[in-house]
Length: 205
Image 1 (cartoon, rainbow, N blue to C red):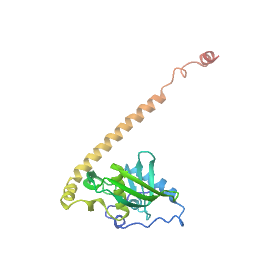
Image 2 (cartoon, one colour):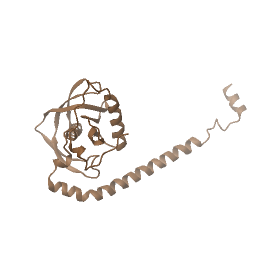
Image 3 (spheres, rainbow, N blue to C red):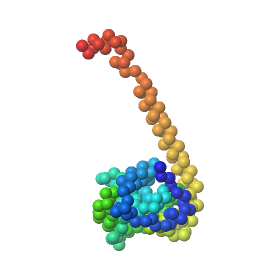
């Protein structure tokens, strides 16, 4: 089971190896394991080196295909038009920064079967891919912000952490109430279960 490596690890600053489809047969296994890890951590994208895996691949949620793995991704085109949005990262919890990125990109990659693909992306998908490709190039999103913005984000980190913990506690309590209600509902006998055996037989005869 994959675990996030520590944020100070050199692994996050070291580009992983190109995935060699000719000599490796575990692409689909990696896709499945990265997908499970991303869902467990609550992200929308996750790169292999974030969990210490030395392979050039990331997974990302898509609108029409669910979670998709991108092996050996390469951004081949970027638009001149950019936008500025707040980003976070699973490897650096509770740090949020306004990052400028290209609005539109073209991405060349291979799927888990080793097939070559090219896709054009915009909006959040474009931003997420740029973030993950940065990871695979050994670049962390903190490097995309000014020193002033980074200092402010680090100063706000304890407050953001407290907000996250409070949110997680509320979510856990809501889930507990939901599960308790479902358990109580399952334990209540239905009308047919409360009937005598003879009544059941007569009603179905």
